[in-house]
Length: 296
Image (cartoon, rainbow, N blue to C red; front, side, top):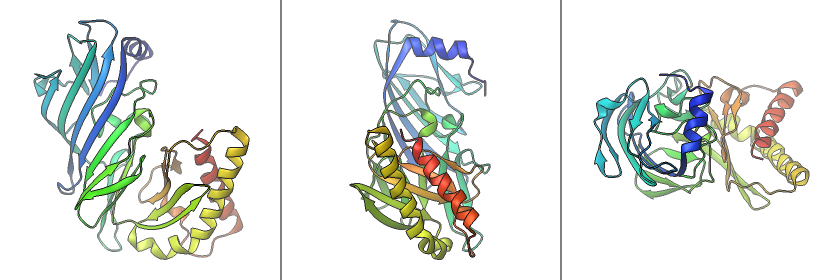
């Protein structure tokens, strides 16, 4: 996949404005691939101009731009050329994507304790096109509507509040405008502890086999979370804008944590299995507060 140059990014952002994304993910297609259907609405300041959308798919089923089909073979080196743009445009891409096993993109892991599978998105820095078709540069922000199909015993979390709308189907609340690399979905038989603070619904989540340390550390984690909210509300004078606030401790994470708005992911080593030292608790508290600070 080609790297995006500064000149290309400037040219694309001067040409188009992204209005919205609607992303449908089907996570019930087995352990290797998942379905991804994306509708992108965007405007163009130059009639008849050309640009491209970023896409790194296992296979592409259908593409259409403003109702006109595009040959899936047009995708090359991670880019789908878009020609003859109108003032208002709608792009539809239906594709099959591969799960990752390196912590980038939509990562799927099997818990050796019980052979249950877990999925989470980590799209920083440039992995979003391996999950959905997008204009993958951080100044082209847009709100997201995300729908997820998942096995019946799975829980789904994401940037917007998740609602089970039918057996195996979850709808996430429309997000604020987000950069592509901030979008995440976490799905699997996660166990949860929930709370509330100052009108903000809170949740902490981990794989089923970590229920005991999750519940044991819940009080301390919520205490740090609530104190951090109070501090940042006072410091910035602006309320937290992203609705619910979830903290998900995920397996095989390749970073310490990631500040996805409304759904922060952490390496699950932070759920200390044995007695935690003061230094370990301070390190974790610092990470919790640090990630929250990015919400502003």
